[in-house]
Amino acid sequence: MNGRELRQAMRDGRRVFGTCVTVCQPGWAEVIASTGVDFVFIDTEHMALGRPELSWMCHAFTALNVAPIVRVPKPDPYWGCMAFDAGASGLIFPYVETVEEVEALRGASKLRPLKGAALGSALRDIANLSAETTKYLGKRNASSLTIVNIESQAAINAIDDILDVPGLDALLIGPHDLSINLGVPEQYGSKTFLDAVSTIILKARERHVSAGIHWSGDVDQHISWTRHGANFVVHSSDVTLVREAVAGKIGAFRTALEETSDKENGREVAAPEI
Image 1 (cartoon, rainbow, N blue to C red):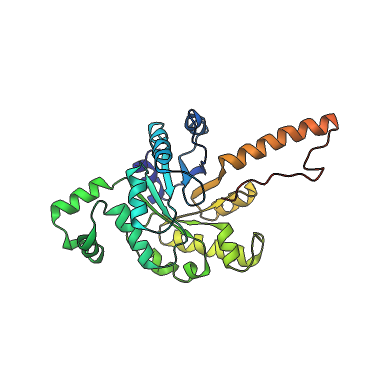
Image 2 (cartoon, rainbow, N blue to C red):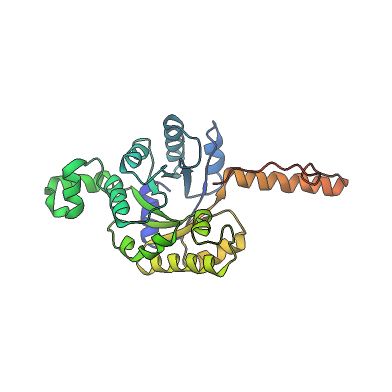
């Protein structure tokens, strides 16, 4: 899907599927596109990706009709505009907790390239713009997706006000940070965590805003959340999926050949947290 198609699918409440991509190598985009994903999630908050690499990835996936959605390092409209200039189809602001942060995201994604006092005036009331400017901005940003990470109790407390902001396309739950903020670090089966995820998904879908969770755990759990309303499905990452596939194959060899692994002998290399 291109950005316009992805946005329309999400506005229609249809399910869309993607994964986090961290590898910037020739040919890798084609490999990912061949899996049937609708979009890719490119994370510049936790991954060491510079502007040239990000732009290369965005343009490569766009050429393959896979919409690139970029999470910027912090909820800052200037970072957001840089991501769009690099070729992003959608923008994710991390750790959003206030309406003001969502409005800043809206300005970067729906009213780009308007800036300064004119942008502030338009955010207060779009009628403050001329008819020509309104038409131009609507056409210019028709494919731009606006997504916020919900990762704290403060964000959940403000969720009704956040969902009131016009033009919001999706809420994306960050499970790791959310679990820590809720006082149940990495206890993804706890009632506190599960209730929070359910609340976020249900609140968003009631308002016809897409919702999802970036989940690298049990597939059955992710399917369960999807059946209960999550339609922005961001599953795992290229690094994690390759690690799991290789570990499974090598484990099968070791089991069949009665070998032991370095992990069983006390050596284990951890994958990066995303």
